Length: 330
Image 1 (cartoon, one colour):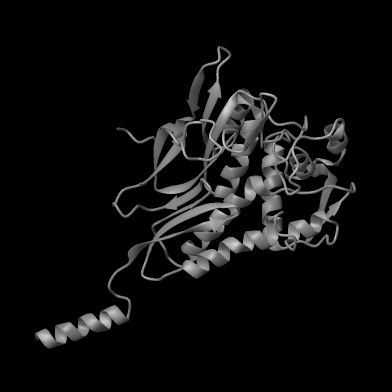
Image 2 (cartoon, one colour):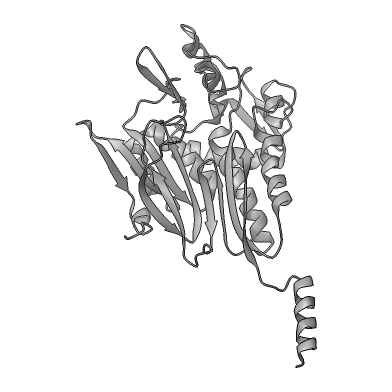
């Protein structure tokens, strides 16, 4: 082949996108947090990525007054979209498996404790007991594409599962478009496939549960090597406030109506989808060690790393067998 023809073929190849895929990175803000997405492709999917994430805002964000969930909470509609129904189905599943520890109808309690949309802090005397009467997924009945409240005043807060769903939507988009290698992280919720640009499994750190609402003092508990699946973490060391020397964290026990005070201080869950990993991580914070380990044993697709405080007041770590196999060996 002549040099002239070789150059011509190279030009044609570049114009056709045949120069080979490269790793691309996208960073920005969504859902009140930061996302980092890395993927290998010949195509730039930045706009598509944003479009997939925004679907969650339109459906499930309490901070968007025109979202489906905001209008449902205000009683303006009973009809919900397919994304909402997808969330509801998974939320029901985790609710049932966890014995009600995971419950997306905690919105009134989340607001009362100052972690919702109303900007208040601390409930009024007697308010929690009153609100418990309108909390419970059994107070909502699905009829086709309608979710019907059987008790007036029920509201849904999907924040404990929606970020994970947003991660999954981007992953599913990549899968449909043949992207074999990617890492999607939104506010610490992660899903991966394939390998990183360093030609090795994705290395994902699990944070130590160090009180730091700014997230500027991160310390790693361990590092996992992943070629697929999702990892989500819930902990009471980022979103919290202190009143009269007592710490109040954002995870609310739907049965007591109060911020959880369990032995688990950080729960990281590995599962096939980020939505279920997200939901189970919250459930484990509510359940505590004994019940969380029971669920891990009973649900084959779920693995966990639980950081907890022993009766002696010392920090310790429990890992399921599946998680141990993923730990990076130094």
